[in-house]
Image (cartoon, rainbow, N blue to C red):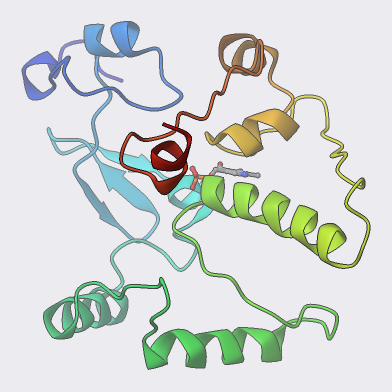
Length: 189
Ligand SMILES: Cc1ncc(COP(=O)(O)O)c(C=O)c1O
């Protein structure tokens, strides 16, 4: 990036970015504020070729008018669809279409919000599957060296990036506190 362009006033140290050395970033922020087709643009108007299609999730190209118009139309009609014990008809019709494109062994769809959530969900489904078919001891996951599976604890556990493991998975240290409001604590009090 161009050292002559001072982008520091456009950022704020109160905002942390994931998977980023945030102090170093603040010294010389790399900012993008527009996209079209295969390119991003910096705030001062320079194009940057997007060789990774966003984070591998804008494969049809940036800001395609038909996609932007569909997003805008849906946001105006219903901006959020709750998924806990409720659904939107479009969710089911998309799932049905996806299954038609997949090999016969892939027969179900579970939508998530990100790759990290997908990784954690896949691990949970694998455990639940073995548990429910009577193999509760089948809990071992195998991860690969240098693998990246996102920022959740599950993805970190099967990931293979040593610095992530050192920072976040040194020791299992999760305790489950009982809320003073819960029926369990009322009974035991
Ligand atoms: C294999 C893999 N798993 C998980 C993730 C995390 O995805 P997200 O950044 O959407 O949480 C990525 C993202 O690069 C990935 O490549």
